Image (tube, rainbow, N blue to C red):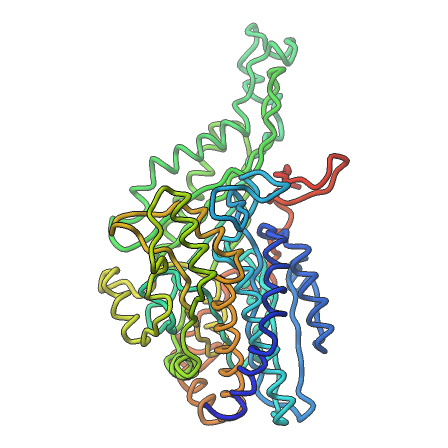
Length: 531
C-alpha cells in the first residue's frame, strides 16, 4: 500500500476510540426515517468543526446535508461518500444479551437494524482520514460528504439526485455491512440493487353529506340528523379496501419469477366514528422492490388503479405522493477492483474475546450451549468480488440482472461508484436451519467490541481508496471511461437513465412519520397524524 494511503489508515487507528464514542452517540439517538434531527445536527456540527463547509436541509429535506472540503494544495477530483443514520420502528433494543427495549421507550420505538449508526460513522472516519492524508502529503482534491436521511425507505438519495446534488462528483464510495454471509469483505461487481419504489396513497372524504343525498328521501335523508343518516363509507373503508384489494391483485401484478416484493404500512387515519361520523382521512404506504423499471411500472399501474377504484366505492378522493423511486444500479468494475485491492491490504475485521463473550451470553439467554467460536467465520474472511458475484448469481435466475434494494444506486448514474461490503458478525447457528431472533442482531449493533471492527475497517477502506484515486490519475480515468461506456456517453448519454422523480421533486417530509417528541409527560415515541 502506498505511503499516502497508509497515512489514512494510520489516522483511523489513532482515532479508533473517538470513532467508537461517536458511534455510541449516534446509536443512542436511534431516530426513524425523515425525523433524524439530533443525528443530522451532530454530523453538521462535527463536520464544521473539522473545517467543512456544510449546507443544511439540502434538497428540501430538514435532516439532510452536504459537506464540502477543498484541499489547500489546489483543486482536483471530487470524491464523495455519505452517512446514513435512520433507525427502523419496532426494533427498540438495548445492547444487552437478552430481549429488552431501550430504556425510556417501548418495543415499538426505533432501533438500528443495519445498523446505520455504523454506516455513518464508518464513512465519516473514511472521509476524515482522507482529509488527514491529503493535508500530510499536499494532495489536491475535493471531498464531499452527504447526509442521507431515510435510507430504510430508500428516501434521501432519489431527492438529492432529483435536485442535482450529484453533479460534479468524479467518484463515489458506498459501504454497508454484508447483507449475506457469503458477501462478506468484498465489493459488489455486477448484480447490484434493483428498483425500490414507494408511494403514499391518501384518501379523503371531502363531502360526507353528499353520500346518497338525492336518493335517500324518506329514509333519513336530508332532514335527518347526521347520526341517523346513511353514513358515507369514507376514508377508513377506503384504506381497508385498498389493503384487501391489493392483497387480492398481488398475484396478478407480476409473474411468479424473479425476486420481487411489496409491503404496506398504515400511516395515519382520522377514524373518530363513535358518533356515526364518517372517517375523513386515511393513508397507506406501499413499497415495492423489483429487478427492473418495467416490473416496477407494472406494480405501480395496478396500485394506482386500485386506489381510484376504492375511492369511487367509498365516496372519497385519492391522491398519492412519492417516497422513493430509485433506478437499478450501474456497475463499475474499475472502481470495485481499486477498492478491493485496498481492502485486501487492510484485511477483514477481527473480533476479540469480549465480543465473543457477548455472543456466548446471547446464546446462553436463548437456552443454547455457548460455543467456543460463536461467530460465523465468513465475517472475518476476504471474498474476491468474482467469487461473491458467482455465489449471488446462484440465488437468482439467469435473466435477472439486479437483486435487492438500496438507494445508493442513485449515485451510480452520476459518477463511478463502488459498494464496499464489510463482514458483519453473526452468531453461529447450533444447527443449519436455526434462526436467531432479531433482537440478537439489534443488540450486537450497540456493543462496541462487536460493531467497532466493522466500522473501523470500512473507514480504512474508504479513506485509502479516496487517497488512491487522488494520487493515481490513470486509475480514476479508467473508472470514468467505464462510466462513459456503460451510459453511452456519460450523463445524458444514449443509455443513461435520468432521475425517475424528474427535476426538483419535493421530498415527502410532511407525512405522519413516527418520531420522538417532548411533552409535559417527557420524551415519548409518537405516531402523529399526517399534516
